[in-house]
Amino acid sequence: MFCTEPAERMTEEEFRLIRDLIYNHSGLFFGSDSMYLLEKRLSRRLRFHQLAGFKEYYHFLKYDREKDQELSDIMDLLTTNETYFFRESFQLKAFTDEIIPELIAFKEKKEERSLRIWSAGCSTGEEPYTIAMLLLETGRFKDWRVEIIGTDISHRVLQQARKAVYGRSAFRATDESYIKRYFQEQDDRYRIADEVRELVTISQLNLVDQNRLALFGKMDVIFCRNVIIYFDLNAKIRLIEDFYKSLSHGGYLLLGHSESLMNISTAFALRHLQNDMVYQKPFADCGGGS
Image 1: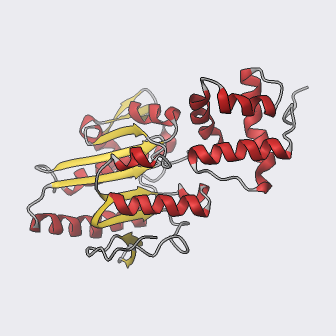
Image 2: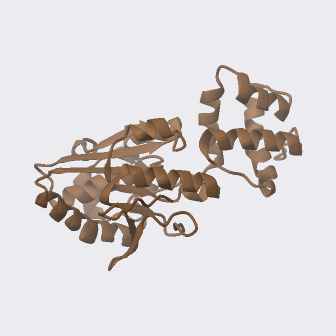
């Protein structure tokens, strides 16, 4: 008879050891009430590696030569990667109708024609490709250098993002005109057009890896939606400080609608735009930290 219960139960000590190891690797934090969730989701990895229990699994995560790959693989089990094109439409309307015209005016004053946008925690790629389509729709960037960088910790979701082929469920909030213009139908799936893909670079990045993060250079806009909900307060503070450093003066940070910087950072200005509320790095850096 099929049983959904984990074959091996996790002790409190094993939970703390594995929980802390995951936290140090990724910033994802699991409170004491998450022991059963961690036990249930990781039990399949015990079976996969033919390990007797969670103590052996901890030693595997800690010392095995495949430990980094395993930690990357289990991120898929511990986070929700469900996403779709044109998610959170009010925020996207603020981006296209208010933020982009403001950035264009600011750049043109400085005689700059470059735009760099980062989709942090891009999952299977719908967000960075949505951003690319929105920019193409404006018709304002034909002679600009536009870079949209999508990053995620999970190699598996990034493989799908690079393939750029999606099923119908990814289009639940997409106008048919976008599908006709920017996708080619393949059987019952849809492949993104090359003009969209050319604007987007997909890269693996662990957001707690501050050294690699610093190499990304300055950004004009950072999308980090529904990501920091998985972090504890200390990890959130560190990440938001890193985002602040990564943004150009006047650059924007766009979080998910359930997320805010309350009790995390006072460095950003909260902008009440017509379509949404967003965070902006002040033009004059007064030395604000967290």
